[in-house]
Image (tube, rainbow, N blue to C red; front, side):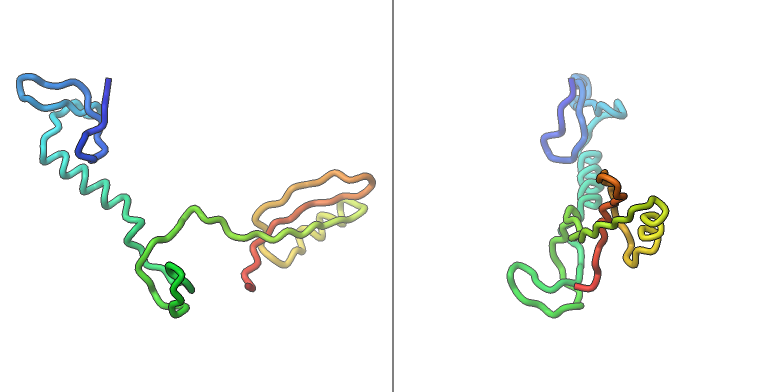
Amino acid sequence: MTRPCKYGCGTELGAFDEENRKYLEAASGGLHTKERCQEAKAKLEAKNDHGNETYTGQYQANNPIQTGTAQQGYVDHTLKPDLKLKILTDPTPEGLAQKYNAFEKPIKFSQYQLAPSLYTIAVYYEDSGK
């Protein structure tokens, strides 16, 4: 049975070594010393540095700031871009393919739709002209 280190270094610990009075690391089998714990903590902090990023933005914490200047703060990498939808239709598959290939914006996602005697495809694109 393993358990995480209580000091927050992210290391999984296995059995306790009575002779050395230290826990064994589950992955390597080595002793989990204070030095190894501090090294693992430093690596984890370097990996999780999302609070120390610069970005250019319009607003930060409901405070207007200059657009285009680098700001220190939180960057949310989970946000998805706002996609716009355009439905392309044509009575022939060749015509629909031509419309699809001639679409003026870069297509992020598309989905073919069934309709009686009409070929349709839903095209989702990102409009950068906001």
